[in-house]
Image (cartoon, rainbow, N blue to C red; front, side):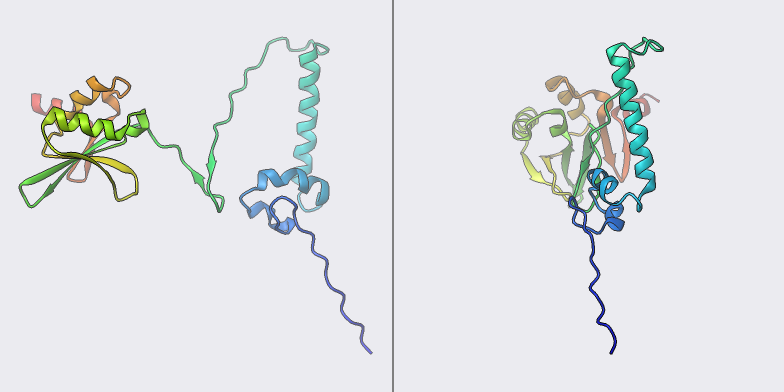
Length: 199
């Protein structure tokens, strides 16, 4: 009679709960590395070499900080690595650029809506900003969700050329170089408009 096949015992990572050979494809590979070095060193020999090199560097740093090693007396200033926000699935969320985008949208051939996006990145409360814009330009202004589910300010009327001066005076943190216009699918800065008007 043939022998019964024995079940295969599969070892799973205690951090990401994947088999060790799939840890590198998971979203938490950096957290898995210490566990992999201890429990599956044959699968990732590069990690073992890197860990040994890191340990040697740590020992050298400790010796240098206590003053035993006098080979290098200058202090090294290391820049902190930029914090990256990780989303589920291992995707990395990019840090948004601090810029204000002003867009003029024409509807019904005569009516215009000026949209202001990105003021919240400068620490401006959008509800307060919409009230100030509405009072300054004597129009309706409201905070709405845009097509990307981010809040933006919609102001009735074509105030796109006067709004730059108002924004820079009211909120000094917003520089004129960080304000961009989008008109007819083209993006440009207000300084470009002034140069075109002068010529």
